[in-house]
Length: 201
Image 1 (cartoon, helix red, strand yellow):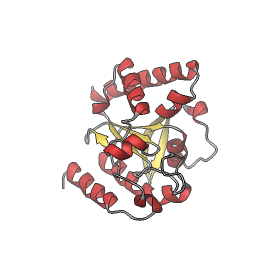
Image 2 (cartoon, helix red, strand yellow):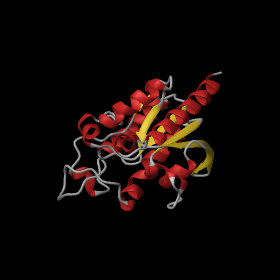
Image 3 (cartoon, helix red, strand yellow):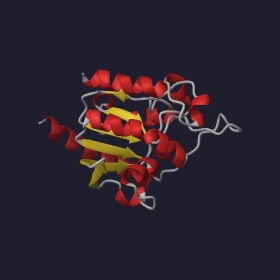
């Protein structure tokens, strides 16, 4: 079975998933976009409002900012495979229009979809965008993205080792980042660009 067919099968399972209460409030499952044969996978936190409406990850205001950062770094997002920890927008029933950080029980019920995506794509580099992705995939709840961003490290996913790095999440860059952190992100993406072209060579 082809990579695309395997991913489509997982996507269909996601679309029928009712493992947590988020399915009751979603408009769309946000599975992925980008290149199925990509060497680099970008993993974010969860869909926001625009992602939920369109079914595409990183498509809102923060996503457009991320596109700008990629362009400034000489990168094209179409060359990457982009997905999130959660496939449904995390909101609360009493605040359905307010995004929030995923709950651990939601992550536990959704993470196997991401693990399957990683196994199928088999990326040469995983870029963890934001603290939730970093803490979830490293299993280190106290790890701080400001301490490890820009570094390259090994990531154990179901017994297989992948190379990984971490960057600030686009939403953080838009709302909270200092000028220094914005410059650091451009530097980090520049390093990812060098890695990317070395993988092509």
